[in-house]
Image 1 (spheres, one colour):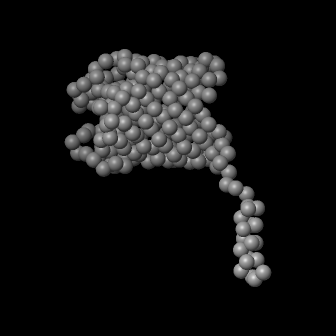
Image 2 (cartoon, one colour):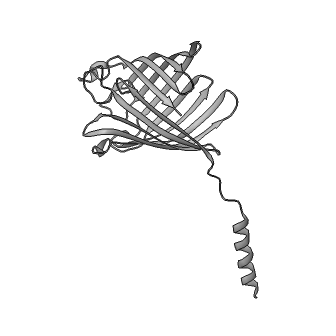
Image 3 (cartoon, rainbow, N blue to C red):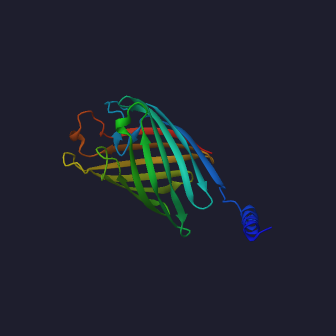
Length: 227
């Protein structure tokens, strides 16, 4: 047996003996319903109605390495689409007991209304109950170079009951659009390990920049489960 054959056999044996890459991790499923789908202070289907229920849910898979992939979906009316489908992937790490970081990419799909499809890169930090995250739009002629800054805080009021506060600031690359501020103030109540009830007033400023009432403050109630 010549040297090249022996070398090939040794390399093959080494490859077979090497440990396979680990894909171990855990999955987290979520399912819920809300009285109205408001995102960044805006009613998603642009009708001046306070109650338009939506079913929402998805799954996230986090690898032991810290990388993750996920999907989230919501019913509604998005132009000619009846569904929003979000796909994301990124990396999350806990730097200390109180401090964590998160960065990744999310893409929004609207089946039947491809002109709305767009993506964002994001990065965030979580300190105890305070979360800060920044998003940057990526699709030309849709949201490219738009920026969104979001802060969220949950304050425990009593056992199983939290006060939830959120504020966001959106800047637009298009000179024809004015920047806006959105807000949310609400309560979240835990019904055991998996179930949560919520209610919040959600809206945005510059209400008269749109003529459909979609930035008006609304009371949004919901129920969700994680398992």
